[in-house]
Amino acid sequence: MARNTDFMSIIHQMAPAPKDEESKDQQADAYAEALFLRAFTAYENDLEKLFLHYVTGGGSLKGVVAKTYFREIDETLARKITRAGYKFLSWAKPQEIRKTAENYIENGWPISEVMNSKSKDLADCEKIRNRIAHKSIESINSFNEVQRNLLNTERLFEITPGQLLRIRNGRSKELNISLYIGVMSDTLEAILDPPP
Image (tube, rainbow, N blue to C red; front, top):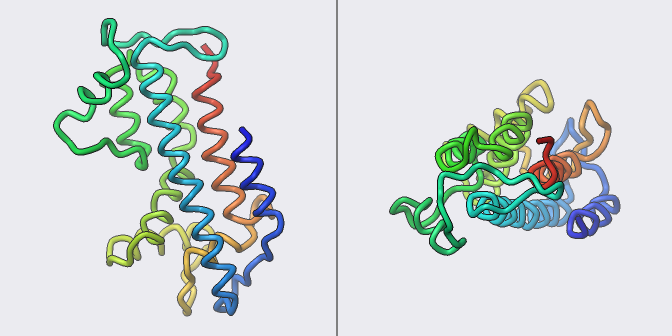
């Protein structure tokens, strides 16, 4: 996906943040947060489009068509029905996305299976997004959980979402932002071209 390539070229220019002391580069942290928010918003939008594509009878790149519970319906009507009275559906929480897919497509294929295989990283993305968007007790606690999982401990100093995104991942050695944007992109590609 071209957008992912653009994001990654920007990320490759980012300097890594320290993991053992508070970041002194607030500008770089804010930039990482802004880029992550843009990527996450695009991911949510693309995920909704893919859901509507499959639920209205669209096929995968290989031509496999999902078994939708709708008959002859367009995307506008499908969107109204699947919202079920809510202002909007959430495309941020992997478990909610799986439930939505399973409610309207047989076995939720291909969305449910793909979301399940990447649910931990996608849930982390949602927690980081929430912490960037607001500083509620719930979002701070969820973000601290992500921090503990990535760094194996909570730091004695406050780590901003931007600093956490700019820290090198212990497993892959890439910046965490690169890992998470990669997971979002891989998820969309797997839903677009799933195994039958």
